[in-house]
Image (cartoon, rainbow, N blue to C red; front, top):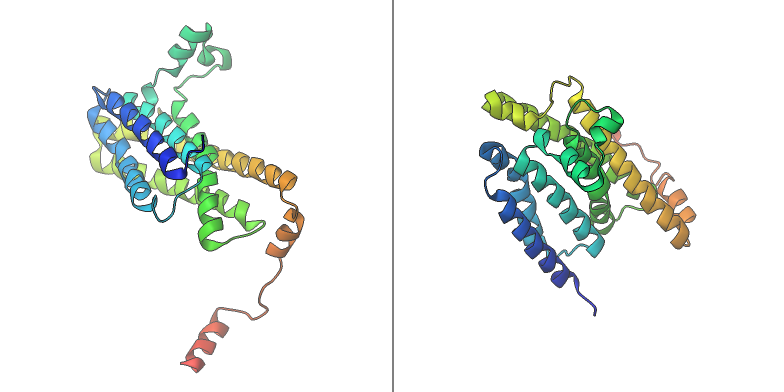
Length: 239
């Protein structure tokens, strides 16, 4: 049975709402949970106001909600205390921390990687459908936006830690004593986006007949006229 985009989004929304309610009950740190959910509320509002006029693909909605599901786990436990190691030990009988020699909780690193891996494609869909980017730019710009928003989020974390301070600031920042935490988080988000765009490109190379032509056309100079001061002079003359 064919399920249209609205029905698909409604189904995911119902499942996520149940997941959100369950994890909103008695979180490890209520204040940190509230901070972690601030951007979730913004994202939910954006999806709500755009679904009629600008429905995304099922692939994009799936990736967005998968990321939100993972994020809500981190919000419930706080990222630095999410017991993924114990879960895997109970389910499969081995400890990832012991296997790889991890000395910190790496759930936050996983989510930063998933931020790029799962959200780069929805961002690409926005660029292609709104800005009509083609070829190389359809793969580079989602990577570029992932890197810039990842850096912006690290600034938000820094600001929140400075404003709230104390245990709440430390919990939200989640560095766990690593002075390079912000750089590693940004690198993992970028790697995730690079993987997503590489997979997307490989699929399109296989299925899109004019892939090479579109790629080459996207890198050609479209205007020989310089901008900057030349364009300003031109606009002043036209005025």
